[in-house]
Amino acid sequence: MGAAVGLAVVGFGAIAWAASRPQTTVEFAAGKAEVTRGRLPRGLADDLSSTMKLSPGARGRLEIRGRGETLKLKMVGLDEGTEQRVRNVVLLRKRELGAK
Image (cartoon, rainbow, N blue to C red; front, side):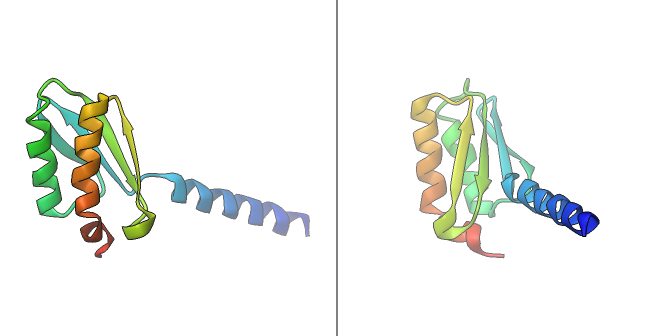
């Protein structure tokens, strides 16, 4: 019984760890957006690159978790204005992120 409980705890921990990782990560630098984990619909990737041209010195990262209505965005290293522009672009195309 003890081994089964231990195995269940390890299994739950592995599932929680996998669920907490971002599905998609985008790095921003030198006025460009580069997908470093997962994938984005082509139109969204292009829109993010266009958005970053407005802030050529901005450096940071966008982590996307979930799909559609459960979409969660985490931004690191971007100024408030750039974060808002990125958020607007992603949320306008959130339905595309839910498609498989």
